[in-house]
Image (cartoon, rainbow, N blue to C red; front, side, top):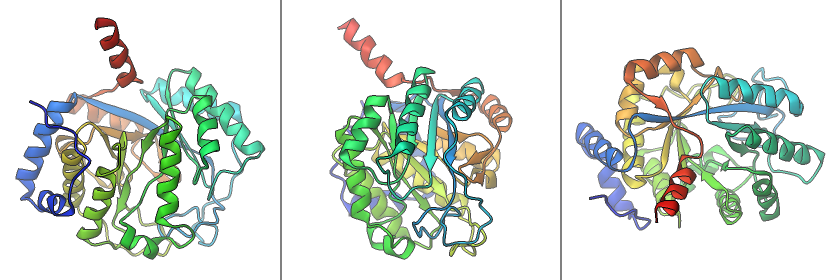
Length: 332
């Protein structure tokens, strides 16, 4: 019998789950994962930086902030054909979701946004789930993206509301939540998670998970990122996140949001196949594939294919939820 999906988690409940003995926590998460999801399937996503660097934000972890000297060269918005070529290569390599990221503080109603809308249409026509992460959105902009065929929008919370101002001062936590609300109202699925290793406490992690798990609808995707400390950023000397912290976050997210795609995101290059396997067992069922995540290194497609073969995993098909819904309608 499946548990009911809940949005009424208390901080105390999440605290108790998060702090369970690790093996017991992983067992509970793995059991729930098996009830709600096909554990042999992993969603393979590719993330492309379509406009790199020069961002006016001051996110302490980000090498694309204009105010930090990180060696990232500013690049204008890519051309449509270049993006389509990259998307096709990602699809051929097994990706079913293609995410385009632009280093903008917010979307502006200009020719660049019009070009992004055309890119969304193009990737959608390839039969891939198309995702964007472009910064803050108005409700009208979210609607335009939806009409162009956008499937998902990524806008991470990064950390708890209490710790947020230690990491970013150029926008507020409520700004982030407003963009997520605009995305949801436009009928676009929500991709929203965070980063661990920002100098936060375990309580900050619990509070971030509480915010995600008590939204009116759980995000369809929750990326769990491990900080990749980049030289030139304020967090360049932060210590590497312990693998057990990643496993604990993934397992807790899986228990709180049983049907959500929990994405093992940034930091995978630092993990062995055995460590990644433990994350999959704890409930991760999505990864980013390809040599880069925006500007940071990522395992290659070939490395991931070898890992999938070893672990008996296979890529999840695109639009699976919609296809299942249509099948149920026909059968009814």
